[in-house]
Amino acid sequence: MTRPTTENNLLTVHMGDCWTVAKSGRCGGVSRAQALEVLRQQVPACTHCRPDTALEFLK
Image (tube, rainbow, N blue to C red; front, top):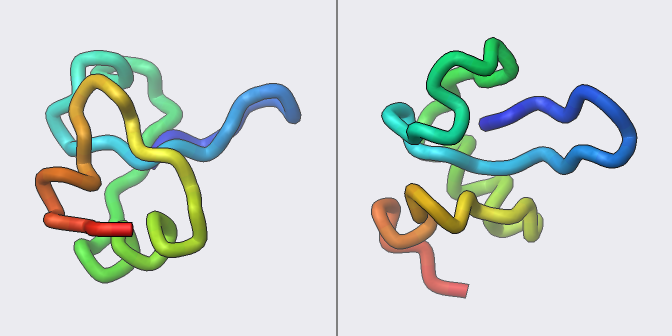
């Protein structure tokens, strides 16, 4: 997940190999269960790597 750096940035769920955050230093790994839980809490999924699709998360 990408951690927000300012109040304008949002917490976002990404796959581990997502190119948009590859070297940002703002990402931290989480378990599958944790990722699913934050997706349930309506934290947005990255539109590039689509972790919601990869985790078979259906809203």
